[in-house]
Length: 166
Image 1 (cartoon, helix red, strand yellow):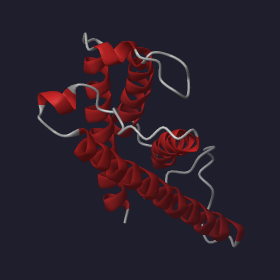
Image 2 (image 1 turned 45 degrees about the horizontal axis):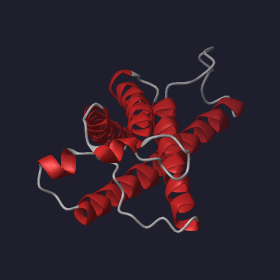
Image 3 (image 1 turned 180 degrees about the horizontal axis):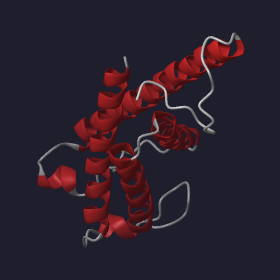
């Protein structure tokens, strides 16, 4: 199971790297839409793309280079939950324009806005469900180890966080 989780975390990192680079490259472009005000935060789309792209890049780097699955899955879950809440906020204010999450990349690849919007929703579902499933598995593994420690079946390692399945 741990191998599947490592593959999931790596694939989540790849997806976040791609979407972050799309946002960061698009934010440096000259499209007029980048100067429009984003409806939730009141910043320009350029600044939102720069900020969110940077956060996605940092989470992708954690997925690639950290060894602690709980931290990796926790950050992906936090980011996916933030995206979900953001999209719910857009629905609540009746903002129904397709997601411009990938910036100008969709135009360069000749992908329609609706297709890109659907792809981003699928990626969001993958990140959300996969990260929470990973966190649940990780939590269960820790509970099993703690139970075995309490029953004196194994000795504690002395570290503040046990590495499960590494």
